[in-house]
Image (cartoon, rainbow, N blue to C red; front, top):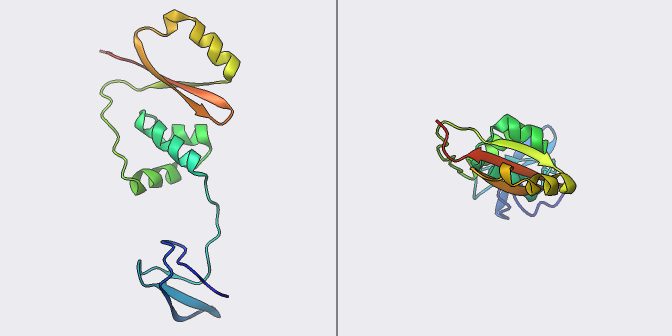
Length: 139
């Protein structure tokens, strides 16, 4: 088996480092990561990573993001730590969110009363749209 790169950092400076359970063990000289085979695992598309981090910055909890995107809240937490995302203080409010298809979103936006007095952001979420809304000044 020819290993070309470390599965963790993708560096090609690897050396043999013994045998474990009848498999050759390797060591990456850059990140000191020990491995026996290339990790294949599930790779989550960067689109979902970006969306999860956006939702986190908008004030949604890890479990809310889990329900929306379908990725474990622990994974979302790990992404936040990995990318060193700092959540801004949201004071005394928590944003509300709704998921609409295109026709529902157009109907919602037609009503001007629902648009005034609040901040909102609309983001694409697969084939649907998420509307995140919060009041600007809440006592």
